[in-house]
Structure formats: structure tokens, C-alpha cells
Image 1: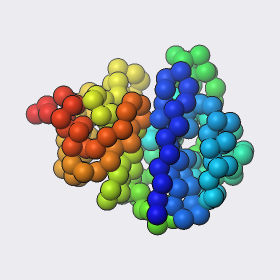
Image 2: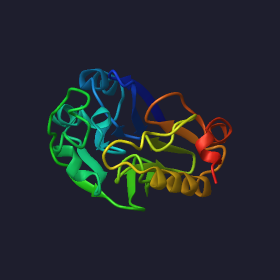
Image 3: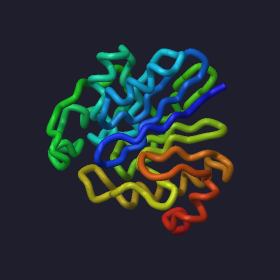
Image 4: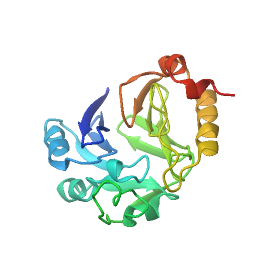
Length: 207
């Protein structure tokens, strides 16, 4: 049995998630407040296996280093965003007043990689547009969509490495891959099904 816990962190109200399955836990998008995340981790029975970043903006990676120190979990990120971890000018650290260079990833992700967390198998779907290396993590019943897809909107494309053309292409791809009943766990905002997103999100209805 799997369990997804949302922890809202930082001034940007980033959705950090803990995915627990059997004795494994994945920490997804730990933007800030590592101690808050770690306190919730300690309430669970499993051990943190991975820290997974859906992209390399500071509000999704800011707690990587501290949580790695606390848990010894491996940091995973798509290979096209990997260099942003150590470049505050591109990971928005300077923009948000957090101009810090973080440690490198332990493992680089590629399209269709499978990340195993207990009984769950997360498939890496490359969804560029918010950044060059943005990803969604998809299972048969839920998807972590980062800042590619919110329930009622999408992530900004006017930052460095963003592209409106690419993110719209990524949304078209998600419409082909996801069914209406799949639960969406976005990088910001409220949760809901993909069907609900199709009703509320105008960007999913652009041709």
C-alpha cells in the first residue's frame, strides 16, 4: 500500500511530497524547510531512498543538501537540468534571494527511466517547457507533475531555459498519456484528478 503526503514549504508554497511504499520513501521537490520535511519523515516507518527533483529551480531543490545530510538519500534529476543545481543564476537562486550552489546529483534521469519505490514504479516522462529538464513522474494511478502542470494553470515559461512552445507540446503529450482518473500532484496549488485539470485548466484545451 502506497501513501502520498504533501508538505507545503517556503514562501513560494511549493508542494513537497513524500511517497511511501513498503519500507521505501521518496522525497519529491524539497524546496525549503528541510527540518519540517524531516520531522514528517520521522513519523513514517520507511527510510528515505531518493530525493527526486522534477526540475532545478531553487523552490524545488533548496533543501536537497540538508536532507541528503540527514537521510543519505540519493539525489535524482533529469540530465538536462543537472547543471542548474550548481548555477544560482539559472536555478533562480539569485531571483529569490537564495544565491546558493547546491551539490551535484547522484543519478541523472532520462526519458522512460523507472524509479522503484517499494511497490511503486515511477516512470520518468521528459516534459520540457518550464525548464529544459522538467519531468513528470507517472504511475498507473497518479502523477507528480512539478511545474509542468497545475490543476488550473502551468508553470512560467519566461525564466531562463523556459519555452512556451515546449511546454504546450509537453501538455499535449500528457493528454495522450494520462487518463481522467489519474491523481495529479502538482508543484504548487491544489490537488485533483487529470479530469478535473482538463475542466479547469485552459492550457490543456489549446490546439
